[in-house]
Image 1 (tube, helix red, strand yellow):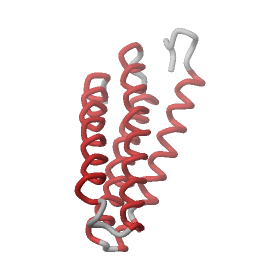
Image 2 (tube, rainbow, N blue to C red):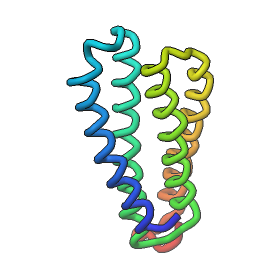
Image 3 (cartoon, rainbow, N blue to C red):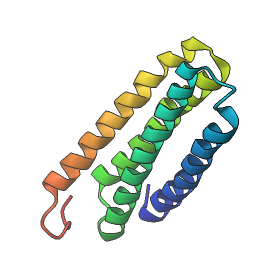
Image 4 (cartoon, rainbow, N blue to C red):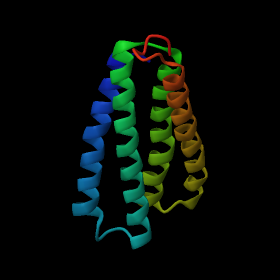
Length: 130
């Protein structure tokens, strides 16, 4: 992972999260049960949070291309794919076994945040040694 790729993926994810949120509000609101609409909204929220986290990591990677930040970026991307992707799929299909994938995505988010924190802890004031 490098800064450019991280920022590109964050930008595309940001665009998608706005489109997916609008799609739910306008096209799915009356098509999904309240439970599955809430599941969709949870996916949208987590995708947006981690899109912003990926954006922050990408900006930091511009200054210092360290392993911890690169790993955090990949973990956030994997978390979005597994956590959010499984929730989007669950909401659209109602296949509850897809919910078994969701915790794996959540674990990737948690480890991503840990890697981000460790990178910042190890970083000097000028982010030279993360």
